[in-house]
Image (tube, rainbow, N blue to C red; front, side, top):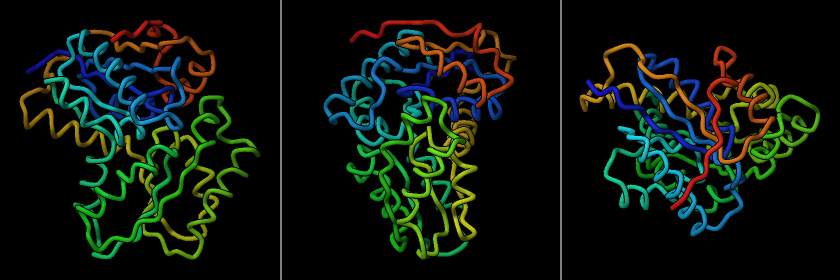
Length: 271
C-alpha cells in the first residue's frame, strides 16, 4: 500500500477531463492537479520551451512527494515525456501509450482507420502516428491539427455556434474516410464531444484519453504495489499557476461533484 498522492499536470483545464476519470476509477487515491494556466497554451510553443515548462511542472509536483506523475496534456506528452523520464525517478505516464495499448487490446479487426485530432505541436511531432504504427502496423492514421479548440475550451466555448463551426471545419478531413476510431489527442477536446458526435456522418468510436489513462493507472498501481488500500486521507488539491475564473467554471462543468472552489491554490513553479 502507498498512500502518497498521484501528481497530474496540464496547461490548463483540459487535464480535468483526465482528473475526473481518475477520481471515478481510483476513489481511494490522493490526487494533486497542477494547471499551468500562466503558460497556456502549450500547443503553439517550441519543443524546447515545452520541455522546459514541463520539467518545472514535474519538479513542483515531485516536491509534493507524489508516487507517480501523469502528463494530462497531449502536447507535453508528445514532446517532453522522454525528458521527464530522464530527469525524475518516479513512474511517469502520458496520454499516448495507455490509449494506444487499449486500442490494440480491444481492436476488432486488423486494418483500422484511426483519426487523430490534436494541437499543432502534437501533430507536428508525429507522436500519435508513430506509436499507433508501432502497435498496429496495418492501421491507417489521419491527422488533424485543431489550434483553436484548446483556447476555446479554456473560455468555456464548447457548445456555442462558434464551437460548432470550428468542429465542422476541422472534421472535413475525415469525410468519406470510413473511420473506425477518432482519438481526441488533446485533453481539452472531450469538452466538444457532443458536437463531434453530431458532425460525424458515420458510426465512429470517439476515444477520450481520460478513460483510457484511468483504467491504465488502476492496473499499474495494482501490479506495482502502489495502490492506496485505505480511504482517501487527504483532500484532492488543484494548483494553478494563475487563477482563472474561466477555469473554475469549466472545471465545475466537467466534474459537477467536485467542490473545486475549496481546493484551488495559486502557486509559482520554479526550476
